[in-house]
Length: 138
Image (cartoon, rainbow, N blue to C red):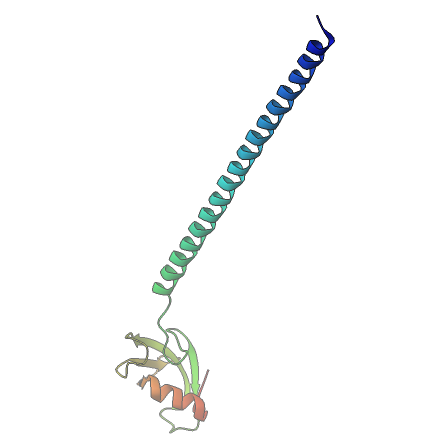
């Protein structure tokens, strides 16, 4: 054998090893990129699912929220001051007729805290006016 042929074989083997190594490296890099892409896609999908669940929880909580009128809910106590003797004193919100916010037909009905006679009907505007003027104190 000639020395050129052994040298040529060694160079050929080295080149084929380098080509194979580059091919394996490229394939590993491609797989790593695909794995990272899959991970990112899964993270985005998980985040979107979490946002949908949070939205559904907030919608359900809003639907189950207690009805308020002028910041008062059923069972809340308040005091009327500066009115007539029949109205002054402690009251408790007995009932709120629900409706859409800002609807003038919404009413709040209060009864005496001690169970005495009488009911106080308020529209939202009247209740807000009473609160702002200091006649109704929460």
